[in-house]
Image 1 (cartoon, rainbow, N blue to C red):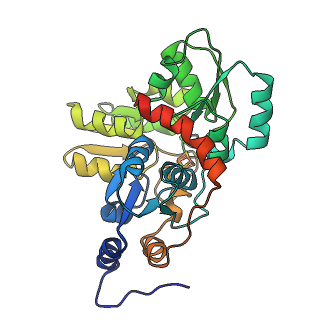
Image 2 (image 1 turned 45 degrees about the vertical axis):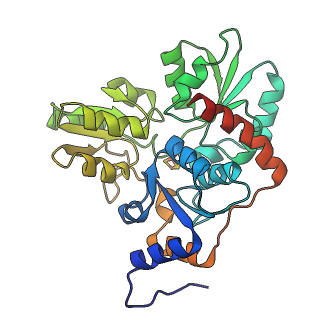
Image 3 (image 1 turned 180 degrees about the vertical axis):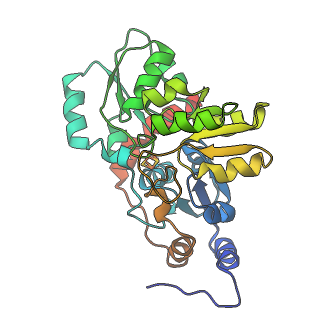
Length: 315
Ligand code: SF4
């Protein structure tokens, strides 16, 4: 059933009213559509949103993001209702690490500490010793005693970057994000030729050849801070294009150019089709009807909680 809003109210006003009535909170990722970011109570990257989810007093959490993020919120709040506007909003990176195959790998290396990037399913989290995000991955790796071998999953690009940063050798799972692997180096260099004073900033999920030409590499929040706190005024931004909304709000006087994708698309940039499955209307309907809801077994939540808590203790 689709709930239709009374014509005299805007969807935004109706959402605000519903949120109050139901004591709900809307958490949105920076990669969401601008109109969703505008109605959210908190906007953040994976780490910031996990922290908000852990401390919210709300009864209902509406997660405007993708499935693994809503799952993380549920694991941190097993007694609360966690809603995701579109259950099909998955993640290519999370999908690149199926639990059965990962369990097999783990069995072959029983002495390894398992570090997983938060972009993985709840089941993969149950197989992890500690979770990390791109904001705290270096800290997490450095917290592991140097004599302990490490399996890092699922993102091989972030894994390679971390090996360079920390000097630790790690066994990498062969997973990747389709959005961050879509950047074209040739087009990026051509664009840079047109804007030679620009600083190239990139997310570490991007491929090695993109990271090599970047002036700054960091998490979503790290990139936002870099653009805010440096004196430079032009940036080529290599991550999901949704971040440009918040970035431009923070620095309206600066020039932000999305890094070009290999394929020509409508915006000539990289957008995550999973993130963009959520719409304002779906967000409204999901809170009104309190569905689709994220449901996980108690046992799975209990096992997945520990590695997430370990990460939060370190952050
Ligand atoms: S941008 Fe990549 S890692 Fe992030 S949700 Fe989309 S597919 Fe997953």
